[in-house]
Length: 64
Image (cartoon, rainbow, N blue to C red; front, side):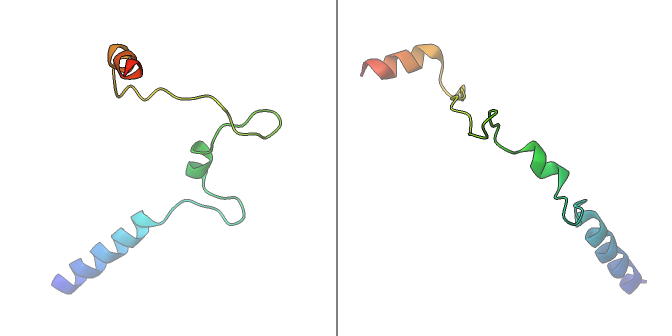
């Protein structure tokens, strides 16, 4: 019985870890994480806001 449970667990683990990628098409997940580009194919030059520090703290840091 223990051997059956072990084999079943391994089979299920293998089944759930396989991605849904198609041959020569790529994975749909990687398409969501690509860097945004403009019409010419150049990467965006916009800077993101991290929100790590408040505006007041950033202003004080620039003064130093």
